[in-house]
Image 1: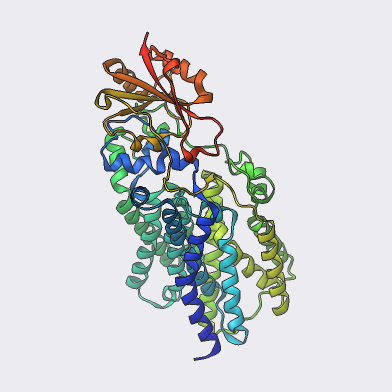
Image 2 (image 1 turned 180 degrees about the horizontal axis):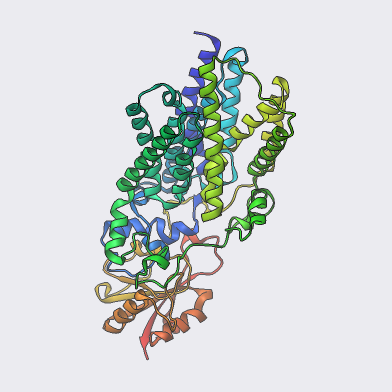
Length: 543
């Protein structure tokens, strides 16, 4: 066995067995997840799903009440069964498997053969994967259930499978090709079924088949059957929920795009978060620089990561360089057939990354949703630098860029607290007659994570949120809650954050209810350690 083969084997073992638990350890070092979405729906939604509470509680997790809960079911059980540190470590471990996938993609696209191949190149691929993993988004999401760097395992596997099988698209029969792309599409579709924003990566890979240098009809069939695989993946992981939303609301994407479905349970609108979507072509053109210079244009918390701005600049430079006529592609030591496959892999990879970005910036513009590009950016940087510099220069340039990116990187902080033995650390107020009690939730703070900690017989309704609120034009859920509260004859309490007391009073007034302030109970769960204001749990009475 040659030195190169020994190195490949050793690094493969390290990447699959030893690297992922290191990210589990890093997750524990970073602290316990306490982000907004966890407290809003990551814990409540699977609880509601498993206990059939969708017709019992009314929108405690706001718009997220309608998100597919399937992905979060294992997380819910893990929180209930294992110590908090164990949950964080296990999540980080799983997320660490992005490393060997990036390493494998780097090997496919770098195509290390010929006289320029050596164990040093394998070390380079290892550095590419390391830099990919140490990004502002990935570090921020370690040990959390945002799920972007969990679903990335499916998306990267799909991309890797296509790149690995690229030669078959030139040599195999149509049946084999179709089997490959359906299988690859299924992986990305499964990710999109779990979480709809992952569909942007299905679009990117599906469209990229058209850049492979084979007859157009074959390209069309590859793209078409990849899309078929995507749909089958969506059907498996998300089909039941799309059907559920259709049966309940006549809108499979409820409440999104209700401009088209016109469900009476929501207002006529599309409900998308448009805060981070550029409004002009000029903003789109400068948007890559936001990752390093203007984080609030992409995210609600600060961060800094220059990998995408640098990649954007280098792509523009390479484009201008080639158009100027000064650049001529370097000849590689490949046979004609391997050269064709190599170029196809490069074209497919870069086209996918570019389309990922364009679809993302058009539909979302939210920092977390583009984590796949963050993971792949160091590889893309190397592939460009390899074209612009000679053998010695490209290594120096890559080292300079990677060090700059890592030294200047500042991870996003979506909220973490110190580890304790209890995941939430909440002392729940006692309720004497839970079977005849309604708890009203007001304000827009995420508090639904507390519901599983209360007696399961208590009903929760949120009259004020990002989806419901007392107005002159109530939606179907506003009217439903009005009827529920009016017909209730037992105890009524209200749960809210202390600084939202004025809004709470006004919201209750719209339901002919009055806050009994002298009987309020104040408490502050440990997971809210970073929040200044406590929670109030107060009885209310009718006017």
